Length: 111
Image (cartoon, rainbow, N blue to C red; front, side, top):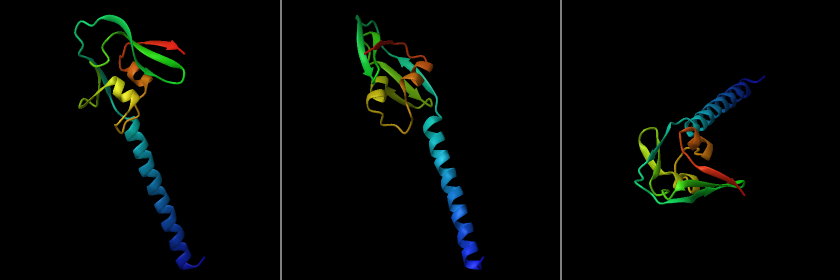
């Protein structure tokens, strides 16, 4: 193998490994976070309130409180749950199941 071609192959392999490493770190960063649910509602009227829906389910709170239930990401960033699910403007992969695992209480109704 010619000397120039040998160096070219080594450079390509090194660049590929670096790109793969950066990709893995980006993926982990997007999925590696803590969530805490904070409910700042006071006495709310008793009624089901839909706050999100996906292809299979509609999700409801047991009372009118979608403007007072927050998710705190990594102990710093605070967002309304309904905003995270309907229009996630963060770099994190927020799903209804991750919010449920963090303690969000809701009802799911099959469509």
